[in-house]
Length: 311
Ligand code: 3HC
Image (cartoon, rainbow, N blue to C red):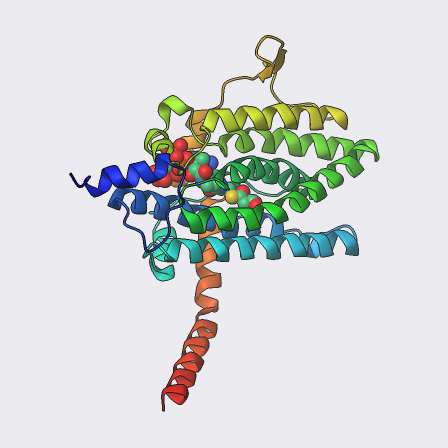
């Protein structure tokens, strides 16, 4: 008896097969992936704003060159992810429109301001290490184009994390003011980084289905715990304190226990009421409109080229 498509599809997932663009897939699988991949791409692109804010004010030519390279990488990550999402039938215009209309999300952490140079260290170190923990796991996601994009992106992320941590190491090896600046940065970026892994598993809207379809390979809380265990040691190694009075090593669990996450703040920020949400969207819209002429010129050129080659 021919199995309905859904069962055949689930059997392929269970057999660890990669799903490719032309394969049959349940509509829900396609929609879930377009949601997650487009929001992943939006996060990469919007994330360039807090960092780009310091390119002209980097303390040395070397730091400026490194930061420029990182911001450029993030644009590339956005490009891979938009292209991978397009293989599922979403168009770039639809995804950008969803972002501009507040229908699509991007990582809440990018709605916080980058106030000092130490923030660039904290973002590179904490945000990119959280992204690495998440993205290493996503390398095994069941959708082929997404998994392959992750493999490429993960290679570049380790440089991002290392340069951020090096900035923090340098500051913690500096004057009292520099040490205070680094501690102030981790105080402001630690908890938003915790939120990058999403709600607790019990409150996660998509986790159960995403785990069944192997879109998500490890749970939000599992990835968060791995990140905490490594980030706390890295903080302590350079003399930084973690802004969590409940943080304690739990010998039995072999992990750090940590304090409660402020989910009211999380929900406020993802609902559009974070410190920089309006500014981030306005900036993205302006850049998109200012770049319209480039897109028009490219498609005019492309049309001319096609007309010539088919003449
Ligand atoms: N910021 C904004 N929204 C978030 C969020 C966060 N930190 N965490 C969760 N959400 C949203 C989800 O998108 C979902 O909303 P939606 O239905 O409108 O999409 C809702 O909260 C419920 O969360 P779920 O756990 O049910 O959602 P997911 O199963 O999608 O899990 C996720 C959330 C773990 C972020 C998952 O989507 C994921 O792994 N995404 C890919 C990784 C990613 O997007 N990373 C963003 C940072 S990229 C980055 O930092 C680049 C670096 O190089 C600078």
